[in-house]
Length: 327
View 1: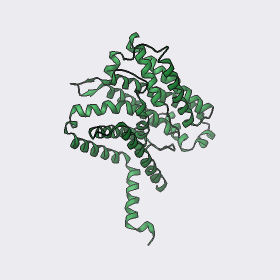
View 2 (view 1 turned 90 degrees about the vertical axis):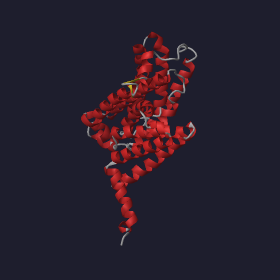
View 3 (view 1 turned 45 degrees about the vertical axis):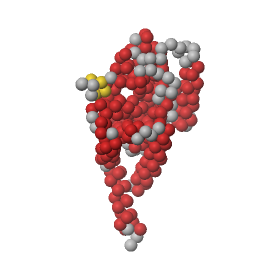
């Protein structure tokens, strides 16, 4: 009898195959269990109001995690998404006296510029994504800290329309408007990955960038497009976060960076590229949002929540790597 024939080893291998073959089923089951546990801790959570609050948090997180999913599929990452979101929200708040549409456009412009700059650095100048995006986050923090005292002095509250989009609801105050925006983003991202040439090339680059380059793919152009999209998605998420809070500051989205990575990893997107889907990321964002509610009800502080998110990333990165090697 070999080691592989032992009952415990066979059960472990079967569990790994189940996770690899049906990840969305597993994630859906985890989500249901977490909702049930949170409801047991706080029965009022299992109401339209409680679930609505979870979706209010999940929508901007899911949109920011969409940016990470697109980049992680190529083997990249964006550590500047939280600062891009904060900067976009700050500009949107500052420009709100000029009208909501101008404010939103100005905020999205921040994401466009930051994302395109990241794309140029990674795609054209071959800067490592970790270094490029970490540097971008530091640059934006320095610029907005200075600009907040000079050219961006003034309004730090957002326009009523932004408040409605980020924190308002319809259908008897049950369905958040930001959920509709998230659905729209989700449909576009899933269509992009599954139905377009850009999506196929994205997976190809993540799977084998050298082979993709030798086959004639202009990898730098793909990086430029994807990092620009990531910047726009981060900016949109920041504007929605500002709408939910009603005001902006330079720490607005700082706690969203690690969860945005965790949501993608939970959803099965490999940090090494080439494997994953946005469907899984959606479930990952919902799982983290329910977990956030549970920890809040248990009076767990934000610092401990960040520790939990970090442990989740480490555990699942190891687990998915193990699944991949055993398939």
